[in-house]
Length: 80
Image (cartoon, rainbow, N blue to C red; front, side, top):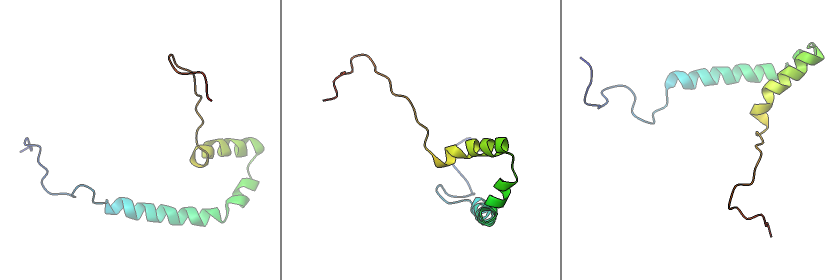
C-alpha cells in the first residue's frame, strides 16, 4: 500500500551521504589521478583541432563563465 501521509519510513535519514556515490567518487578520483600522469602523452597524439575542442570542453571546469552587465532603468550612471 502506498504511503499517503507524506512521512518517510525506512531508508537513509536526510543528510546521510549515499555510500555508493561516495565509493564511486573514490574510484573515479583514483582513475583520474592515474590518467593525469599520462595526459601529456594523450594530448601529443591529438590533431590540433581535436586538442582545441578538448580544451573548449574542459574550460568551464577551470575558468568561471563571464556574463555581461547592462544598465537598467533608474540605476545611477555615476560610479563616483
